[in-house]
Image 1 (cartoon, one colour):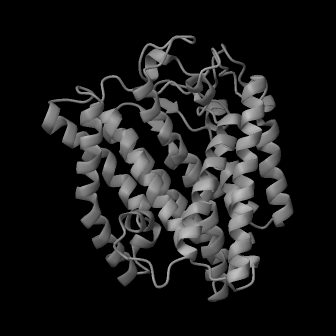
Image 2 (cartoon, rainbow, N blue to C red):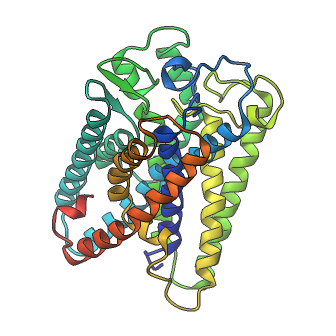
Length: 381
């Protein structure tokens, strides 16, 4: 099958826009809610929420819609890496050269995580989604040699049983050690805060890698593309159905973050830090449904997609976008409101729109540079 699926770029660009909303909220919004864990102290991560308290619906939904971002990043990173690795192999790159490329790119991503964190916090290193992506990429260097069935089995096994391991090595209510925080359970501490313990996110990258291999194995033609769309749709709907069952039972799979009542908000309030099974099913299921929708739109295109589509532009320059948008939104907040988190939701969405408008031409220019200089350092960003 044609390896370039434009819908993947659109999907990535879509979640970049959602991510900009979340980080705009962190820069502008005094009422921001970020209480997505039974492990983290609510007073440290945004607000004074006590389990059982009601959420302001507008604040909750502003945060909740952005939960789609990190799982999509990890999954589609795995997909893109599987496709690009095969392309490099076909053009004569040796396994060792491919490994070096992955290692260098992972090191660049981890370095950018450290630089952004220290720029913002100065004395505290916060390991977030770039840490999860970079570390997972390093682990994929040996794991990519596994047969797809083994890779898929390991990923699904962690998603199904990871809570058993996580809660055994890092019981709720007890201090989380540094090494456990790197791999299993989130912790807010100084000088290192770990919000994205890597294991659950690695499983999502492994799933994405398997999906990339599946795409490569399909034959050319409309029938194969339609079959792929149906499979993605079915997988997404099945994941959402399992989410409903597990969240309804409200027992295992919630990483200790249970429903306080039967309201919709409490159904959607799932554990991101670390990602519980219900969170993963909800977000990857939602991603699959959205991706299949984008694939259907692509399927109906009569010609080449519009190259200046903002989702396409942002999706093809995702890491560049990520590195720029956080300090840009912070700067906009400082200029317009006099500080960080000094305004409300209206300013959050206006700030998001302003940030996207400023980033759009920069991402176009960077995309052109990257295309014109495929062997420059830009290949890693």
